[in-house]
Length: 149
Image (cartoon, rainbow, N blue to C red; front, side, top):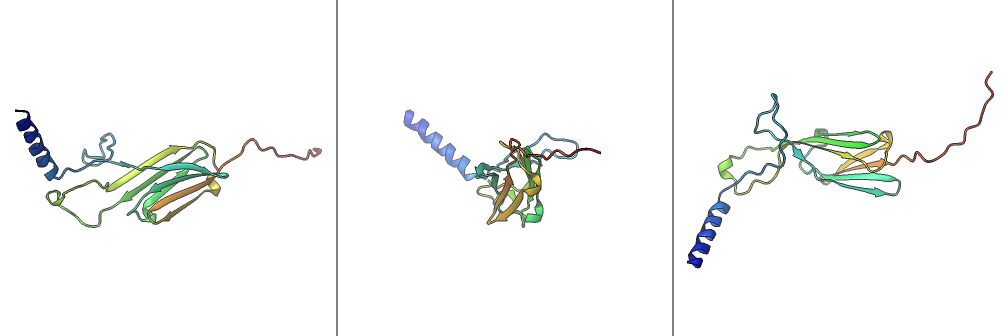
């Protein structure tokens, strides 16, 4: 009896594995401008320090640089973009569907204050690198006192 149950489980697993299943990475709340089928993906990131810099890296393969938007404040960085599929593929033709196509975004609260004006974003081999100099507000500046007229 136990062998028959195991056999049935394996048959069911084989059936499930043979059917394509779309994967949704992340879906925002549906608003009046978005349909339930439209979701927004979330980027994975690495955030680390490199000397006097805070660095954010994210894989954005398949995204043109003009499709990326990076906004930096002294305390956070937001990355937004769109990855568009170049051709249409019918759902019935998929064996696996794991890639995310469409709009994506990610906001990161930074561990240190940074200088947005001196920050640089580069895209190379599908990796977005944002290098932001840390602000050191603890540095003191000696001011010469002038007599006011």
